[in-house]
Image 1 (cartoon, rainbow, N blue to C red):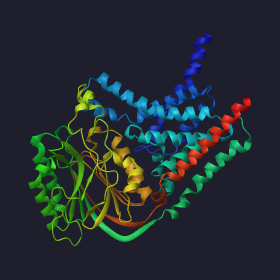
Image 2: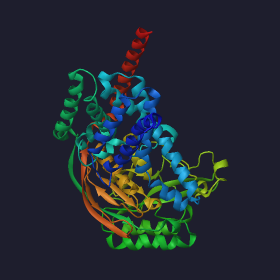
Image 3: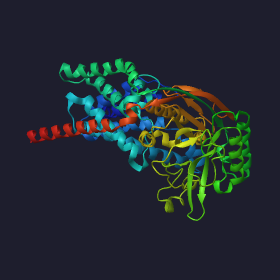
Image 4: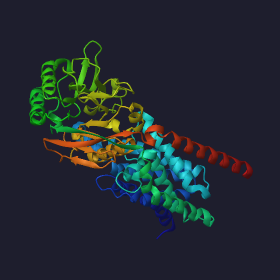
Length: 518
């Protein structure tokens, strides 16, 4: 084999390995849940970063890992682009490629920073701090896309008991640190650095189950019965005017035999008629819920004709308090929630003056909403206080924490994952919701149009779930909790401060070494 060809293959091999490792990382998340896998895939990334000849080469290696990670992990996004975007296959694949390439920039940045501040003795800490900074940027830039954050792989095993203490973000830090510790074993550093970090990481994994006693919450002794309704309305029929009444009647027919529960939940935009013109149906539903001694929380879109503003809302109908003698609902009432964190393209279009002219995907029905406030009052339904999140919002723990009050008894998330067909996307979405229940020590209700509809207890365990792609109802009895988890109290601030301090110290040390070398 010619020397040039051999050299090129040798240079290409790390990228191929990392592309494969990133793709395999998808198996760590739902529905596969190989929670231990990131320890190996991230260890390979850390090792190849440490052996990169330059920071630029390390960034390219991180980018390769990211392309595999997101190319496989969010492949379900292409279902919506391909089926509902109205684009040729080549164009939809190109758009998907741009999204994957954008997301791959974040592990590339973490890799670049790790190599730029190269300090072999502290590789695990440097890698974890750099990764944490990159993931924070991913969660907030361009409205944020924190999907597939590595800590979610620990939702049901591994470091799951740490969720109420340090949250998913803290778990990600420890996971990346542990992977860096594995890579450190192969570094040319003193034995205390080669094996000390590994022993520390192993100790954290070993003691994490015993830390569950410090989760900060306890059962209050109160229970409630709930009904989640899954209408299974096809996406292509959801906004067809002729289907408005059939859809609304379908939800009523599914609900009516089970009205005796404490709470009834309909999913995101379950009522396909705009709220100002759905008054007759809503008045009937309000009275039906009142007479059944319950409350209904339903998704609906509101539209202000004068201002041309629209909101993706949840509204409460029926009883607000247990002692209420009248229905809670009237148009414009305050017992509602308006979605704050809107999904780009799906719910708002950046630069819409230009983009809406380019392709049907930029001009989807109901894709121009106004934001609700970041902090809003909890919904109150039949005396219960629920903290709501619509669809994508459940992936933002800081928003959940900002809206958590001492009265919050339940977390509620509603969604319509029909956009993503029979893919792994809805399974990952449910896993994210499970993590929120773990972090905040509250039971969680998840109502969706076509699945996965489920109830999750305060320890993050799925209590009941409905099969996907069926019109069905889920009835469950949930135990309520009280107290406050350490994560609910402090959020990610301790981790941000710790990571920032580490990076400042490492940067200062690198600068001193450069000056001495100069």
